[in-house]
Image 1 (cartoon, rainbow, N blue to C red):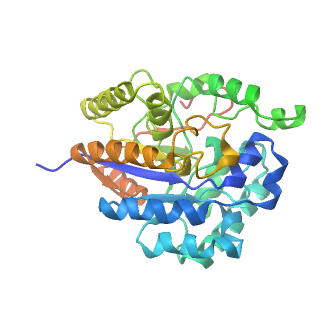
Image 2: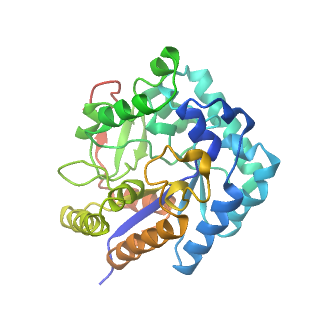
Length: 326
């Protein structure tokens, strides 16, 4: 009997992107840990025979020092997705022309370095708008993956504002970071955005069915810093609920799931960064091996193709900034 499908993606947020979002001026030097994390992740995936999607920031592809690491992702057979050019989590404030420029600059750099033209997109900080969706459709994207259906977005934003070094203007730019309460009402299964006569597939980042609390690996790492047993049981419950509800989980990874404070001291302000990288790597291995025992893990491009082929995805009208889709 064949397993139900799932997908895994990794938002390849670089060191400078975390510093930028946190309000640290040192981000302007574009510090990078790609030479550490990319070989580590590729070895990890090869060992488990997994092919996933990497959402890559265009600015990193614009810097020659990152070319070898980014090229290695494509050479290993992984999908390259667009994670914007400048990694600014306020794309919803961009005009249509600005969105088009942001996407096209990233596409040009990513294709030049990796040989792949992105077919999928995830907005930084899950930032998306109807304008972004329409530009994605016009530019030939097959799917978007920028929604995060959880009720905890405002709480995460509050914690972020308390710990980051941000000016009043920067807080205004980020006022919708991590979404609103309405995000928790959005579906977990893939659906199609209705864009007039067009449509675009949406594959949400999966949260816990019914309760809509996070289950991505960074959250599991956070739980494990209090109790390994708690994190393990929570993850098993999440996979069981996904199976019961017929939800093909789309699991989100981040570079910091594979890095500890012993690897990147500048990011000590992030949760679970006091844990050594080796220990975090072992945890991710356990979580993904359990997932692979229950689901067939695919890159997001194939997840999108299977979802569309099923003919099942419902259509929703885009409604953002405090509302839910119809």
